[in-house]
Amino acid sequence: MNAVRAILFSTGLAMGLQPIAVRADAGHDHGTPHTSGLASPAVARVEAQSDLFEIVGVVESGTMTLFVDRFATNDPVTGATIDLEVGPVKGSAQANPDGTYSFKHAALAQPGQYPVTFTVNAGSDSDLLAGELVLADSAAARVGASDNPLPRRWGWVAGALLLVAGIAIAWWSRRGRGKGASQ
Image (cartoon, rainbow, N blue to C red; front, side, top):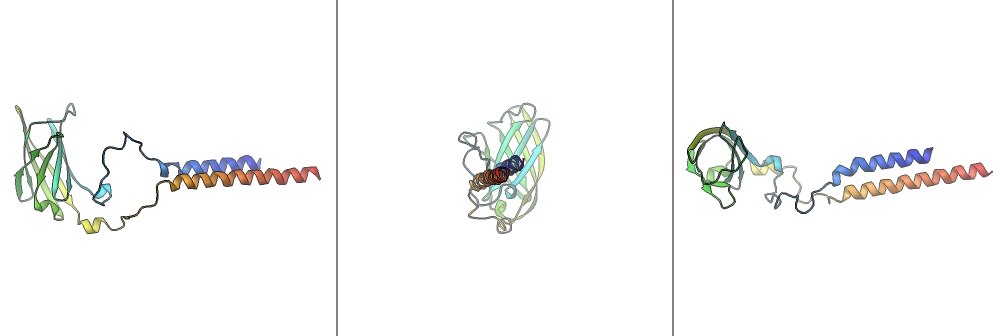
């Protein structure tokens, strides 16, 4: 009975470590990895929505990339004119070939909290959307971020070692029981 408990315990421990090693395979990795050295939650975002449109803006290295969709269908909006105000800065976003829009300004590289107003004109539809953008100090955002994270396979290695240890414990406990029964 101890052998069964040892195997179940080690298997449960190995399965508990499984989420550590989970990774997406080719085709499910959502494109190129984020290269700024910041963790994903530290990337500045602004979100706004109305009855017609929804916008997500991601700021990286002084450039805001805008993803604009129709609210009702989630279809991307292409060929639109987007004017925006980020705090005191005003300008127009440029359309990109991939269907996104870009707005570059030096103020987007400065830490701070800014109100953002988007004016979207797409065909006969136009709308005004508002959001809030918080740009963190990049040096402060990197605190605690590791340039050399532990290898992702360590979860698998730890699980395999626990499984082998469980099997060894089960074998020794059966071996010890067998000697006691024969005497």
